[in-house]
Image 1 (cartoon, rainbow, N blue to C red):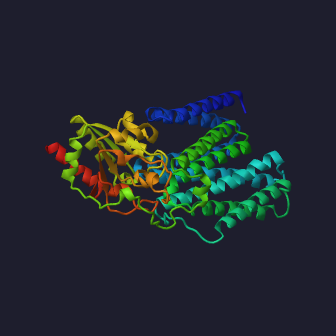
Image 2: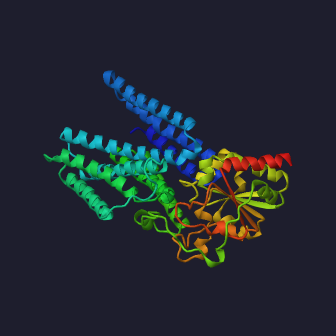
Image 3: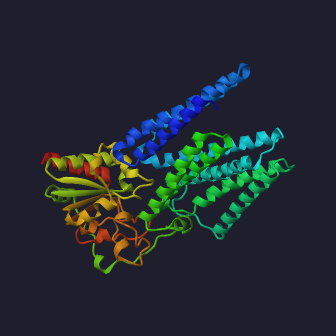
Length: 472
């Protein structure tokens, strides 16, 4: 590898680290995206030039066709996805991209193994270990991400898919994959290396699917971040396979950041990663007890009554959830907030780490609606302010505002950090029906004395509210 190429890789690695740092803040996230794109270009171009420059004649044409064709196809897919995929479907697209990263690692490692064995060159232990790790991790990442995509897209049920002996089977498959990898490492040129290789790939793919299907839709944010970590680890092992430093560095960054984010998401639900992966949470609706102080009748209100409460308030906190994404109501929320701000109401947004179907889902939707970044607050920043807030507007959120997490020890979500909406002077909940969230339990906030329920499509309801304010 030439010195200019190594320098480009080094600079690209530094830029990737900076972009990862800037992605931690909404104010610098856009800059981080541009920097990471430039870093990727800086990493790809020298490799392309080096590969093309090292060949002549027919081999050169083949390289140009293969590499150029791959770039063209990937660019078209990326552009079409960017323009056609709705913001509400962003979690599914992230899941797909995680899976494609795993598939790419599997293919690279598989080609390396087959080429070396076909040429009877064999693989040394330092070469063989990353090859087989790439196959196992890449296969699990690919089919696991596809399972997450299928659940998010509602191609299969979002509830956990469980069967007897499932965890034992998964453990057996994992041990079989590791065993096959070890055997192929010790004797890569054996007569049965090809069947063993095919079995390793098949087991890895099956394991990824079986690991994710027992996980319920409520835990998909954790799965998405975990699969993102897997894709990073797969890239790292692929870097060792190809002896490519930038892949090793970037894959390590993605893998580590994905694990950190997974840990943050688990803490946000007050659950361990083991409980998420093996607990089968949400397998069936749970009739959790309702706290004695929260029992009561649902108070239904009309749009006019809700508007009257909001326009007479001096402060309001908006709590968005997946229902806002489904109704595509983010722009309507922003319009209503703008009208209230003109009347002197201070409006802020409370973002829960697990609201939506992927980390940062609500941030992305609100950014699309041009909500100012300085109005977005996470749970630690804003939770103590609810008691001093005049009105809380809950748009499609459910479990993250359920006081049962604080008040009812028998509840499945007890101990989960939730917003203190019940401490505000008034709460307005926009919801289609009284159906429970993914936890499958009653929401004590809905029967709280200070809560009024406004039923209907959130986007239409918010539009009516804005219309009343405009005409007032």
